[in-house]
Image (cartoon, rainbow, N blue to C red; front, top):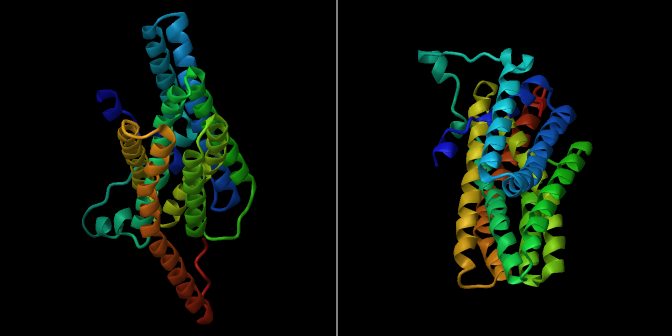
Amino acid sequence: MIAGASSPPFAATMRVLWSVSLPPGGLRTRGLSLDAVAGEVTFAVGPLVAALLAVVVDPLASLLFSAGCAAVGAALFVTSPLSRRQRGSRTTGHARAAVPSPLRTRGFTPVVVAMLAPGMVLGCMEIAAPALAAAASNTVLAGMLLALFAGASAVGGLLYGSVRLRSTMERQLVVLTLALLLVTVATGLVGGTIAALIGFAVSGLCLAPVFIVGYLTANLRSDPRVRTEANAWIDTAVTLGAALGAAVVGALTDTADPGHALALGIVAPAVILAMCTPFLLRMRRADHAVRSGHTEQGERPEPH
């Protein structure tokens, strides 16, 4: 608990650096895609290396190696030229009032709430994998499922970064999250080892793109001066969702088989997405109407 509470906000600050160093559009999308891919590779490789060290050497060596990697990564990040060029700002009085909190920015809160859904799917998968392996009496299956999930997510992030979609970010967030939920439900309902392997791989393809779109949408919906807070809210939503999803599926596996527990665990994120979808799509239509009105009056539309 102490380690979790003292974890530095690298995820939020790193995505701010991507936004500062890369212009909006394809380059920024590819930068965030690489960020997501790096996270998924770490998620897939890190536990395997830690487990190997614990078996070959001892658990303390595994812990020290993990702490050393975190220390080296932190040092490289904070001493990089781009990171050192960033400076905070101190505002008082009217200047502070002129910078709205992201949560008070129009259209931002629905994005944060919607990001609970993919976070819950992530937590469900992390608990369902060992439960499915135990039910199949195959201890290796859990590692295979999680490796497939993370590896496919990395591939999905690379694929998303290489294409340029014409639909709005809010629409992409809804469609990708819906696809993630449907694949996960189908995986649980079909059951069996083969279905689990295919389902974890296909759902992984959707995971990183959902996260990328969530961060891009949050950046569009917040003032650049509070972008760190905006990204931190997205991180918080994903992490909270993962904790809730893990708790729900963990409780369900005590009374149901792992496949049905996984399917039932998707009910809550589906409800969250259904609640957020009208707000996300309505907000985008309102923005389009405003921009169209400005264009008719001879003003340039706001870039997105």
